[in-house]
Image 1 (tube, rainbow, N blue to C red):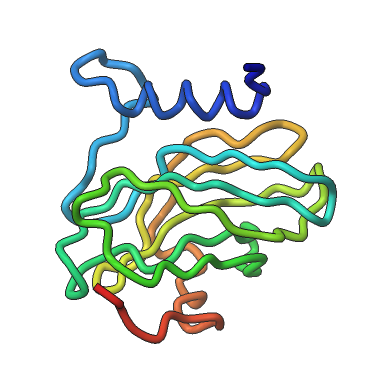
Image 2: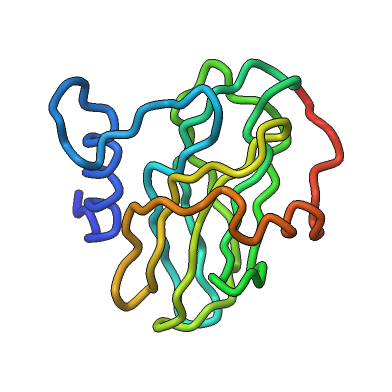
Length: 158
């Protein structure tokens, strides 16, 4: 079976984030106060990409869970939001896909996650399709006005 470059990068990211005690810079720890993006992959073509985003979050049920991930520009323009309809208490980290994400190859974007009761996390992936998306951190209040921008979740299934 042939593994594409994108699949291989995704698998490596998951393995690095799953390693314990290695000191690897890509290791992700579930924080008790936010959702963190630990891997992002994409497929497609300019103007029509599908993203797979891996999130580590301190979900406890509907009272506290990662309720979306989003792609936005650093100027605060929302490009795409993937609503997460339920908590992932027993599945950490978890990966969910979404699209189409309408961006150009050289457009700089940020991918981040949101918790229903804690707001945005600071661990994100940032970059462009051409240059690649790399782990980074941002101020949790960057483009915080997006919390009121549709689409928004309308409840939690479990």
